[in-house]
Length: 190
Ligand SMILES: [Zn+2]
Image 1 (cartoon, protein in one colour):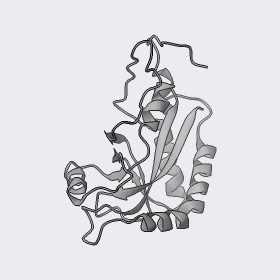
Image 2 (tube, protein in one colour; image 1 turned 180 degrees about the vertical axis):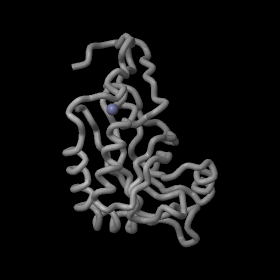
Image 3 (cartoon, helix red, strand yellow; image 1 turned 180 degrees about the horizontal axis):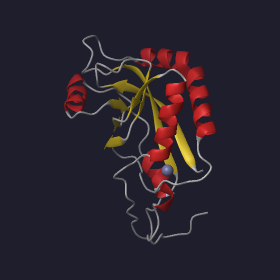
C-alpha cells in the first residue's frame, strides 16, 4: 500500500464542527499562489486527473479508525487551502463558508496533487483547532490558540495515524495507482 496519511490543523467554516473534530475531506479547493504543484515541469506537461483528490480507501480507513478512537468525526467535506502564512480575513472566511466549504488550512496542497502525480494514495486527517474568523464572533483565530490546541491533541492524533496504518488493506484496489496509466512521462519515475 502506497498511502500518505496527512494530519494537519485546520479552522472550521461550519459552526457545528468545533475544536477537536476530525474532518476527513473528500474535496479540495486550492487558494494558494506561487507554490510549485507539479514534478513534471520540464519536457512536456502531464495532466493527471484530480477530480477526486483523495484516496477512497484511505478515507474509509481513516474515518473508521477515528470513529473507533472516539473522535468527533466528519466524513467528507471540502478543505480550502490558503497560501498563508496569515490567517483569513473575516470576509474571505465568510466567502469560503458561503460556498459550502467545510474547513480551511495552509497545508495539504500541493501535497495531495504531488502524491497523485506519483500515483500514491493521499488521505487528509484534518483536526479542527478553532472556528475560522468568519464563523466565530470573537477576535478571530490566533497562532497561540492553534499551537496550544494542536499540542494537547498530538498524542491522540499519533495513535489515530498508527491505528489507520494498521487497518490499511494490504491489497490496493483504489484507482490512485492508475493515475499515470496511458500518460507519457517526460522522465522515468524511480
Ligand atoms: Zn488510493
